[in-house]
Image 1: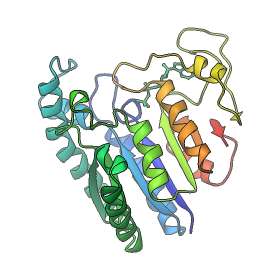
Image 2 (image 1 turned 135 degrees about the horizontal axis):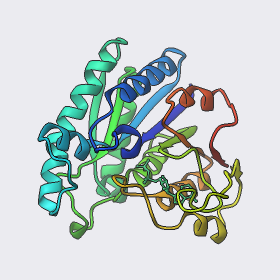
Image 3 (image 1 turned 135 degrees about the vertical axis):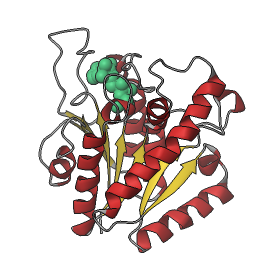
Amino acid sequence: IQRIVVKVGTSTLTTEDGHLDIEKIKKIVLELSNLQDKGYDVILVTSGAVGAGMGLLNISEKPKTLAEKQMLSAVGQVSLMQIYQTLFKEHNKIIGQLLLTKEEFSNRKRYLNMRNVCNAFLKRKIIPIINENDAIVSNALKIKVGDNDTMSALVSGLIDADLLIILSDIDGLYNKNPRKYEDANLINMVGDISEDIKQMAGTEGSKFGTGGMITKIIAAEMVTKIGINLVIASGDDPGNITRIVEKENIGTLFV
Ligand code: ADP
């Protein structure tokens, strides 16, 4: 069996105004369900809780305080999971929620426990849906992974994944920020994550995303070191998930 971790970012899951894009989520769920039917173990790392919370409370501006953001993530997490549960059920799939923190990866006992739990999910063909426990952790507490790109890399190591797919609002890594430079070129494959590569990623992300390209490069560095490939591709067409698994040349492949 091949294990595939798919990470979908806020920019993929939410519309221009920051609310959840249900049609997009439906397509992601279809892709993951199809993969499981083909015999793959699938794990989803998903952002979008704050966006979901904003939608529910009819807020269109980014939260101003940390507490407000944490509250929105708690409100939104429930509704996000409710959506996933309903949509996966249409494909006869059962999901379970895992809200993790850095502690799950830095404390050996918690790490081993988490790994057992994840394997219990997969053994029963239950799809783990993972997010950071944002309502509980804050940067100040120093137990926060901080972004789901890094989280997805940690999870990939935890469950010994074969492939990590990070879907974003951009079709891969460009040699410079394509939102700024018209002549930016997509890089198909990266074998060595050099300083140059990190430089390309810069520091800026989209309006609602938290990570930007740099956290995806860090994720790539983490997983390729332990023999796991990573593909960064566009989540605009979730059909890309299947294409990537079937080894079509899409996005940027890190080996
Ligand atoms: P997500 O919410 O999917 O994690 P982010 O908004 O955090 O997505 O990160 C993707 C964004 O990173 C792109 O939309 C783009 O604006 C920005 N970016 C900066 N440098 C690059 C680069 N070299 N190649 C691709 N995207 C880049």
